[in-house]
Image (cartoon, rainbow, N blue to C red):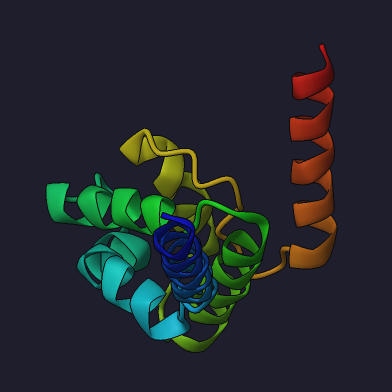
Length: 131
């Protein structure tokens, strides 16, 4: 019985380590952010109303960036998209999350300071949790 318990415990520890390693390797990439935003290009360039696939992509982006590290990466990628893809209107980018009804937790803008914004976001969450 003791041997069975030791093997079970070892299996549990190994499984736990694999799960932790898997989750740590799931960081969002800018190519994923670009994929999520691809349906939004016509809106970002021309305005109007974002399409349903665009808003679905924004929801997918939100789901893919639940934690601090992912949100910071997403923020940097959104800033990069705003600055590198020709014709993107910064006002359209800023309004996209609200037009889709999606709170990304990070702004979509050419001029955002992602480091400062993430610290403000964490501070607001900490404050909400303590009240």
